[in-house]
Length: 144
Image (tube, rainbow, N blue to C red; front, side, top):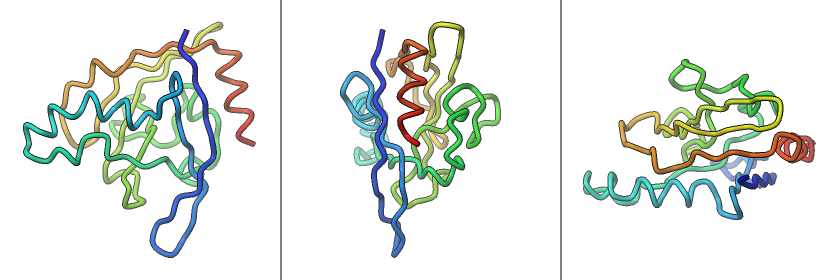
């Protein structure tokens, strides 16, 4: 099983500070994991800085709704059941979203099908990740 850790971080957009969600999988930040997979695509576009260029999702963007991470997304880009995990460093998640499919069953939560909202990059090497559901839900509850 993979391990999920969530932490609340402070992010600055302009003159405002927001509480946002830091996501770690197996001890690594999700944006760092994405950077490795996205790098060849970004380099091919002659813009390597695009790879992994995400910012934590502000909790206000999902109304602090834990169900967002349990298969009932509040923020979705493709509107096909995708869940927005990360947004753009500019502060608008829709500017550069990283999305995932979240499947929940009685014992596990699975993240797969990662996509970038503005590029048709093959991100199949990112995940899938499978978490123990009780541990996953405990991580979400700890955010309160």
